[in-house]
Length: 480
Image (cartoon, rainbow, N blue to C red; front, side, top):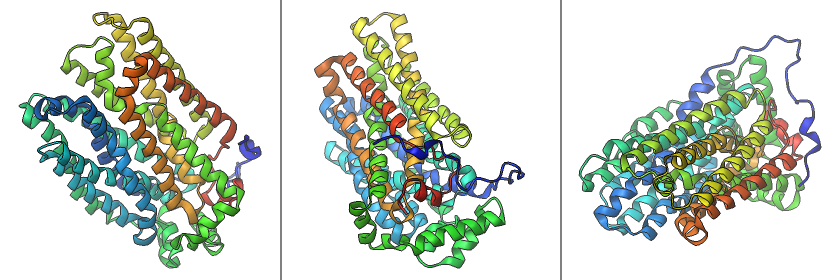
């Protein structure tokens, strides 16, 4: 795919420079925050294995191969939720789909906390995985559809910040419960993930439904009422409604049956291009190895010379703080500097930090007591997670959510999430085997090559989308 000619074009639908800036409406922010908080549970359930595996192995005799499968299989299981989320959200609505995700996040952690062996743990990981798939799809879709163009980059970044907040909280949980008896410590780590679900589900039911979903169902008056509450100005609310009605009348309702929208994938080049961008962006987000650090950080640092379990779990908390905190930078800049500059800086920084990390393992393999090597390794890992989190981490979801046409948004987001979870599962379920086969240095050099390829893809293929309405995207990508 070539760089789109409209990449540097003037922004459609942007207010005249002489007009005073509209006062931003805070109501859609609170709605998007509440919807996105379910992502905390997704991040928690994926990453809690990072520390829990140490104690599970001792308590239940779990092998390295079983740890590898349990760590990564939740991402494969999330495909079920991701592929069902588009169908569910188009029929039940965005709100009830978020509530359903919380139900899975209650049942999954409880099943794992009560597990007596490997098979029962797999059942719990399956249930939590389905919830993860739902959360990954529906939170950014709802945020994108509720947000005015002026704050869409910020609001669709929220699920990623909450995912990483969940990751950080899982690391804190690992550290906090590590002092308990072995047979209790890992069970408490899992059980803590189910506590917030009832409160979150109740809160979600107080939110308005997506105006685009309401319009798709012919409930235009309700859609207008929601737009009046979530737009920056009454004029913007009216304009958003007209644009949504135009899209719906030209085929937006076809997603209810799926056939009309998917026929366009086969017949329209613009629709195929958008889906190809979404799938490729999600492929690169995970195949560059971020989840190897999220789930195996203590193992990586142990091989770099850090020997204390307490220090390893404490450094994991540091990584979580760095990862979650860095997304605040992306949230602040996405609607100011644009998507492309952040994505290019991110993928370039990831490539450089992975090369440094690989070179450290290549040059100082086996240096168990070298404090300097361990310190530089920690710095390189922190640099990698920061680079990922200021761009590719949150903006892959932002970009994917906003470029998909309305009639394909739920199902297209589900496909993108499926690609994301497949690659995350592949990376996390092969990491131990990979570094044992080609060395830790070889594994990180491989991830660096993928990160470099993602830089080229962003530069060559992604036009800027900052400031455009969701309906403008259909003009930009020729999907209308």
